[in-house]
Image 1 (cartoon, rainbow, N blue to C red):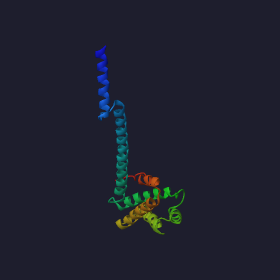
Image 2: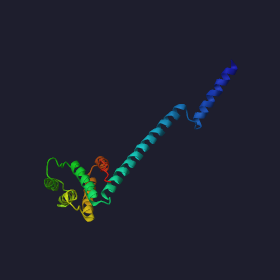
Image 3: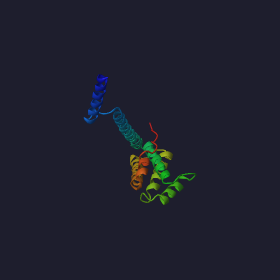
Image 4: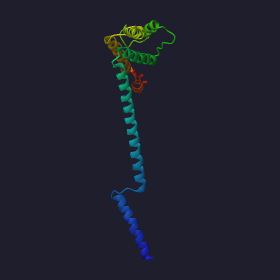
Length: 173
């Protein structure tokens, strides 16, 4: 009986000394493991968010800077329409000219005439026999980027996350 009592006393003293000297109990190890997995999951979500952002922005910029001015203008116009939709300005059943006039009246983020010019360039890109020049394509792309930047500046922090990830533009190959 005395050997059993001595062994349990030594075992109890060893476990108490281990806890005091920095060793972790199984409960502490499980809690630490859960904390590390949570941090790892959060970092993974942040990394995926960043990769998605880079993918969307890169695809949009490539579409707006492609070698074909007509395709670049069309990509920029699609982006402008998406941005105006966020502002509550939809084309609905309006003609291009009526849509441009409504956008100019309701959207005060750009100087007057910019959106009208963008619509005129897009119409030329679609309906003109010869297409548009590279300079006109740059004008509409610049307008799209200016509108996006103005909307981003005026957005709330949560809305900024949404603006960063609008639907990517279709590829024009």
